[in-house]
Length: 292
Image 1 (cartoon, rainbow, N blue to C red):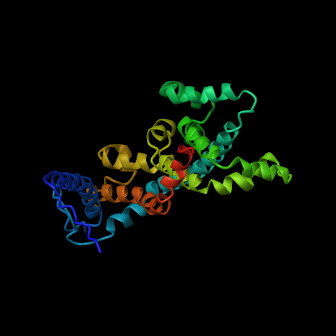
Image 2 (cartoon, rainbow, N blue to C red):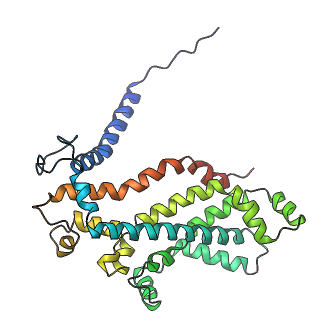
């Protein structure tokens, strides 16, 4: 019976462990501070004091935010944009990518060239804004959804994944009388669930965190997304816009607890969904990257 002698950690290992621990603490402490301040009772809150754990737990800040129309409107707007946008992203991206897997498609090289071109070059902010304005989508949720239906990177990754699926399955389905659309919905889509789960999270996080486009396309504060509202509460707390959002009433609630609670609420949905889809990342994205 043989025994494997365990390797003792070297000085280099200890230095690596120490650096990893230090970097982890640097990343975790801001989250702990935001979390602690958001749950700290306003009566015991002291400005500019570091809170690792709340001295006295309270949900007053969350109750205050959830009672304001501004936060509820922003939450509804973000949920609508995320749900509808993600669904359309998946439909457009997977149907477009599936078409690109067919090299017999008329104009295949030209279409693929356009996709690669947009991967390297971008029109820029001003042309995109002028396009949205000419389409009459300013101050509309569709300006955020239609302007990001898909992108070249997603198309190339999905195309690579779909090409890794056995072509014999499609041939067998067509022999049995299945149409091209039937092959796509009955064969390709069920086999693409790992990739669908992965890109669902990619697209959902992108829509949930949308900030700049919402800032320039949505002129009505009642249609603001969560990220724009949180930016207003955190950075522009002394502005009239923040006052409209219900963040400047110091007599009711300290501004700092409101800011931190709004940050937690804006992160919470994605943090809840992420663990359920994270396991599909490696399988969904890497399957199409290895040929053999």
